[in-house]
Each structure stands twice: as C-alpha cells, then as structure tokens.
Length: 614
Image (cartoon, rainbow, N blue to C red):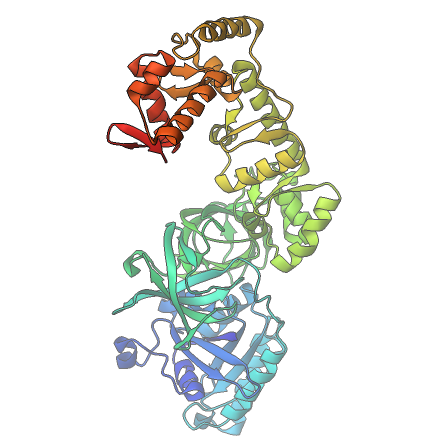
C-alpha cells in the first residue's frame, strides 16, 4: 500500500480531483463544505489497475492552513501536485513545491487541472510555466497530466501515470523495525473508545499489542485496526491506518503525538541537523522559528554551529533547541517556518535526535556530524555508541538512522572486529564502554565482598541501581558478565565468580564455641549469640537449622527429632506435643516450635491437639 499527498494553491481543485478519482469527498468538516475550501486534512483511497491500493491525503492550499498541510505530507510516498490551468503557478504552488523539495519527496505527478476552462494555446503556456517552475526541484522530471476534475477528461491517463509511478517505488521492509505512527487525528467512536489515525512507518502493528503514546508516555493496548474502513489483522509500514486503543482517553492524545512500542523511542528537546535555507530570507543565529516534523509542531531556537547567518540557498549544520518535546529519529525530515509573518524559510534532516549541547565553531563537532550524516550504517552505530553508555538496541538504531535490514549486516561486522558488545538481545555497548562497565562491576562486587565477607553476594537490584542501568539493560549486562566468567549469580544476588564467603579466624572460633555448647544439649540448645552475617553464613552452610525465630538446632539433632516424629505417627497414628517433649526431655516451647515448623514444611498436619503426617 502507498500513500499519496496532494499539494497546490488554494482553489486549484485538489479536493474535487480527489473526489473524482476515488468517489470519496475528502472535505469532512461542515465549514469546509460551506466555504468550498479545505481547512484540515482529508482522506480518501482507491485501487489502481495494477493492483496497488493507494491512500490519498488531501491537504489545504490556503496560506493560513499551511500548518495543517505540513501535518499531512510527512511520510507520504509520492505527491500529486495540482495546478489549475487557468491560473498556472501561484504563491502556494511555489511554497508547497519548496516544502516537497525540503522533505525529500522525490516521486510525484503534476495534475494540470481545470483544462475545461482554457483553450489549447493557454494550456500550452500553463504547461511551460509549470515545467519551468519544476526545474531544479525534486519534481523536475515529473510527468504533467492535463485533467479536468469536473468533466473527467484526462482522469484515465492520470490513474495510469500513478500506476506507473508507484510501480517504480522501492519495496519496504514490512516485518522488521520499530513501528511509528505520527498521529494526525484523535477521536472517539461510541462503543469503541479512542481512535487515532496516521501513516504507519518502520514496523508492523497488531491487535492486542501494547503501545506507548509519546511524548506523554501514555500506555495503551491496540483493540483493533482498520485501513480504508476495513478491519485488518496486521498493519504494515506504508498503510494509512486507524488504531482503536484501550486504556486511554482520546482527549489525552493530540495531533503530533507518536504511537510506538513501549521503550523503543524517547522524546527530545534538542536535535542535531543539517538545514537548507530557501526563499529570500536569511537565518540568523538564535532565530525563533517553528519546527514541523511528522505531524507535530514545536517552537524552537536555531543554534548555527559554523556561522552567524545563513544566506538563502546555504546548507549548514545546526542545533535545534525546542521549547516542547518531539519524537524523532535520525533521517527524519523537517520544515522550519518563521512564526510571523508565517513563511517557510528552511528545512532539513535530523542527524542526531539525542545529542549533547554543542559549543559553536568546533571543528571536531562538525567532523562528527558529517560522519553521522554520511557514514556507513556500521560507522553511524559505532559513533552513536562512542560515549560508552549501554543503550537499547532500538534506541541505537533510531539515533543512528539505521534500518533493521542494515543492522543485520552492520552489527555482526562490528561484533566481529571487536568494536561492539551485544548485551543480550535488547541492548548494545561499545567495546570500550563494556570494559568500563565490567571494571566498575568488578570493583563494586569486590568492595562489597570486603565489607561483607560472609554474605553470598550483593543484592542484584542494588547492583543495578549503583550502576544506574535500566532493568532491560541490566539483564543483558548480567548475561554477558556471567558468560565471561566474571560473576556468579543466584536468584537474588551477584558475586565475583571466584568469591567464596568465609568467616575470619575470630569469627570461626566464636562459631565453634557456640556449636560445641549446642552439642552438649542438642535437643534444647542454649540461645545463640552470633551476629547476623555469621548466623546467615552458618545457616547457608548447613551448620544450623532454624525452626523458629531465635530457635536453632544442630543438623543431626534436627534429623533425629524429625525421624522420631515420623516413626511415632506411623506406629500410633499421631503424636502430641507432650509425647515429643517427654521423649527428648525438652521444654514445651521447643516441642511446640518443632511441630509448628514441621507443619509449615508440610511434614505434619495438625488435627485438634495431635499431629498426623501431611
């Protein structure tokens, strides 16, 4: 499935042409119908003769609604530029064309509409003006198809041209990648709840899947999916899709939010980018602008990294400081506009969605940005990990602008040459970064063992918090450290692999004295006087058995008492507290404690005043 967006000046017949092609009126608002002018995004679809199904996004042409237009053209596959033959090229024709150029939409067709209003000579002049306007743009070679949306003339030829164009577009990676849905509408349907719509990019969505709405961090579950009003079992990249969400209210979601999988992406208020200035207006350092990316809009300031002013036509490196968070990945295209008077002045591509703040006029910063923009997938991944921090795999690929298909080749190569360590399936770290994490982990555990020589290890959650790692990354660190023989683990603790808890000489003497005193009265031993760590070690080593708080037995004495209870019950059917007390010559306190302990262990079961076998 492909998505085509319209573009063009107001009243050049975009919506009428979409309705003529699809039979669907894209103007859904009552005000649009009354004013006969598109105000917000409209949507329609058709199936081409070659079998391709196409979503059509109809955008406003009036200059006052350029912001709505920008929300519709992000993520489209091709553009249908509509120019009225009776007026030819107009101001919004040029602005829309500049936006198409800046967004890198390299595929399109020009529909020279309203040919029923002009003669052949005028039509030829209009065609020549359009071709001259397209010169030097991404649509320089686009076919120009004369049509009349009102009479139907040329519509067959336009559909055939669309079919030929889409047949040349590259196939998408349908099954891999992190899904992103830039939301352009949020509404509710009675009985179903919240519904959001947009064009899906990068990865699939399925009913029942847990999702996250950014930048708010709202969690939801996909209740159902539709495309072109048909329920579907899977939404694939390139589809225009409606997502019915559970556990969230539609009023909490707005245009510009991004639906994705939990933890895959994170909002940002700082972007490294390369921009190109268009039109006649220059850009100065710290200029106040509006950024349009995906379907979102955010005020920003522009930090020029190599100059104090960028002249029209210039391309350079910038850092964009946003006043509100957006969601972006490397390679995303954006538009910059002056807020007042509203005007498109530049556009560009995100190079790093989560950069540090840069100082200006630094050659090392510019070199790094150039590598990030132009390097191979492996080089971009390596640079993303150069700070030594472990990061989630999805975050690394998004920051580096690397697709899943590219990663399948780049990641094994980086591991093979020793530049990268995979922390399980979910996280990545540079080799140098892993060496530092490994050394920190070793030193942390060694210090803990020195402070607590009798404990089996340091609580794993405490280690994670001390290393300041997320749970997903920590699980990968544990797996690699264990595989390398650095550590040993149990259910709750981590230790150095060669560590064996041992008491010191003085502690061992103290313990031996206590054990000897217990041996002299094995069934009613005296209270223990051991510190907590030494007592825990003795229990862990099987030198003592705990039967109740502050009541302990030697293993042999415990085994003898349990054996007697079993045999007594087998012989006579039950046993009482008094019988156990009298047989071993112990106090009632010890007898009760042992039998309650055996109840808890499900060796015995209480029936009234006696115990039977469980």
